[in-house]
Picture 1 (tube, rainbow, N blue to C red):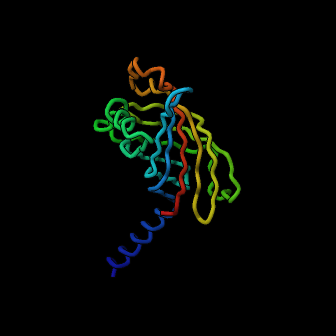
Picture 2: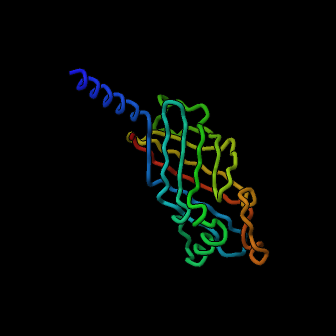
Picture 3: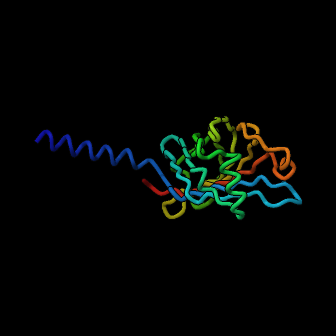
Length: 182
């Protein structure tokens, strides 16, 4: 009888722990490094995994680098082989914490917040502060979106001189996550 009671208590505690997490495996992450008068350098990843701990505002996202899709297949190949070197660095990971996060104040009206954290890409981890974002709760989903900019050079990515004028060193990154209770 003691074992059954213990087993039930363990199951209840496991389910209670999971209730404070919201998750998605279909988040979107877009980036653009275009310069005027040249072909657009932009990609989209529709299979980003993200999780938010609603008790403390901790957030993490993981994107497989090879899942970024470009309009031009050759550009995608160059991105994976020459710039991101995705065979050696297959994941981009962000870990951070939302500032002033209060789960109980979420509503269908968007509110603004910011997040501080670290982005690991191409084997380099860079601290990012004050990323602005919007957050709201719609139909039991937390919708979190925003954008930020990073420098290619901060991640030890070398742009060959022959194409340096066709690519921006500053990359605009936009994200959108619809997180559901885990």
